[in-house]
Structure formats: structure tokens, C-alpha cells
Length: 299
Image 1 (cartoon, rainbow, N blue to C red):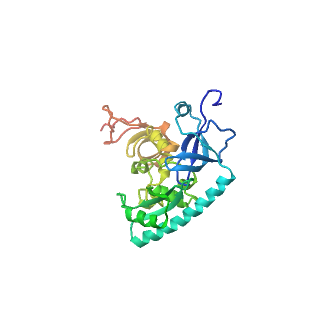
Image 2 (cartoon, rainbow, N blue to C red; image 1 turned 180 degrees about the vertical axis):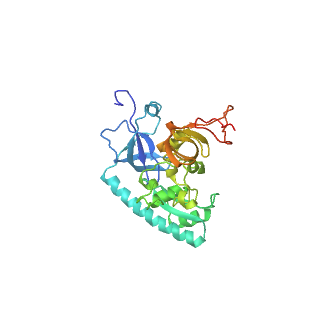
Image 3 (cartoon, helix red, strand yellow; image 1 turned 90 degrees about the horizontal axis):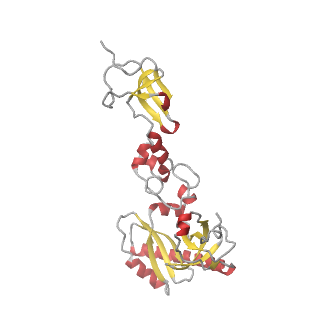
């Protein structure tokens, strides 16, 4: 879609850190932009330099767009300043870790330190195992004594964000964790997703390095939900081309049903080849022997 022909703004997604999501800005006033460009914008945390990560193409978002404008594309001087700020951020991180050990504040892990592009704000990202946010007042005061003339903020991030920041191998053996490789936002994951997919509920099998349910449980969940609508449940009696049997297992994505048939054993059938046996009230008729068409045998 040619956005200019349709009188639509150019909305871009900009990423400011490794673990941050994309934030939308209006880049209509700029031309020849491409993914990977560094952009200067004004945010709630002051002026920032970020990387252009995407061009928004959804017409609904574009028509209702009301975002701050992009200031400009970063020049060589801006990129050198960015490198300098990153070095200063590393120095600030060391200071914060020293003060954290000094005041013996337990259960808090400082992840990173980031200066705003105008050097007015120093933001520390941290994670904690406690549900309630800890009191970081003493830590903030101690750091403020050593790093002056800058506003110091602390921002709590979740365990999945922390895992994304540090990267490394996934619990499944993937060389790079999904969160560090391509996930931008973390969706809610529930134990029900594992049950629907018949995944082992052993904690080590469904838990990631972040000690939370693995994000990949959501990848095929919708396909399983749709596929299961056509599948019989386990232990149900069904008619098959080889006679009546009981469902012992199912493979939803392959639409395969495994049926235990007397004198034959377990056989695999496509779901289209079987019919679930129900009585007149629509309930399973589990008692009594049956003929191949599902009717009870008479003595």
C-alpha cells in the first residue's frame, strides 16, 4: 500500500533497548528511511536515540495514528555520543552494584543502566523475585551521592525480560532463546495450554530459564484448540472400519485417532474414518458389548 497516495502518515516502530518493545512514532516528515536506521525522538524519559525496527502497515492503526513526530535521523556525531553513553551506563551499573552489595539489599538484581540521549536521566532496570516491589530509596540515595547532576530512576522488569536481556541457550536446547531472538512482547501463558497439547506437566519440561512457563506453549495452542473440536475424547467408544473400539490416544494436528479393538489391538485411524457411539440421549454408551454398527447385542 502506498501510504502517501492514500494520504496516510508514515508510522514507524522504534526500539530503544535489547529488551524493549517497539514504540510508534510519526516519521511522515522524513524520507528514505529504512529498517536499521538510528532515529532521534523525544519520549517520556527525555530525548532518546533508537533503532528503526518496523514500518507500520495496518490501515486501522495508520488512520487513527496520533504519535509524536520523529525529530531526525541520527548522524555520525549522534552515534559516537550513543557509544559514549553506553560506556557511561556500564560505569553507572558498576557503581549501582557496589552500593547494592553495601546496603545488603537482597532479592534485587540490577540488569542494566541507560542514560537518556540528553544525559538528563539515568535509568536502572532491575528484577526481583518478590511479588511486592522493594523499597529502593536507600539505594537511590547512595547512587545519587556518587552520580550527580542527573535524575535517577529505577524501573522493574519481569523475569522474561531479564532472560531476554542476558540471552543464552533455551531450555529446549535452541542455541538462542526465543525471547532474545524474535519475541517483542510476552503474552500470557497458562498451564491449560500445556494440558491442551498433552505436554508433560513436569516443571522441567514446561519451565524456561526465567522460571516461568515457556513462551513456546503458545505457538501451536490455537491450532490444538481448533483441531480438538473434531477429535473424540479418550476412552470413548467409536465405530471404525475394523469394528467397535475404545479411543486410547489422539494426535490432533495429524487428525489421527488410536483405537483399541478387541482381538486386533491398537490401530490408527483418520478422524474422518470413525464415528463416536452415543445413546439416544447423546451420552456415551460405555456398558455392554456392541456390534460393528454400535448397537447392543441381545442375549
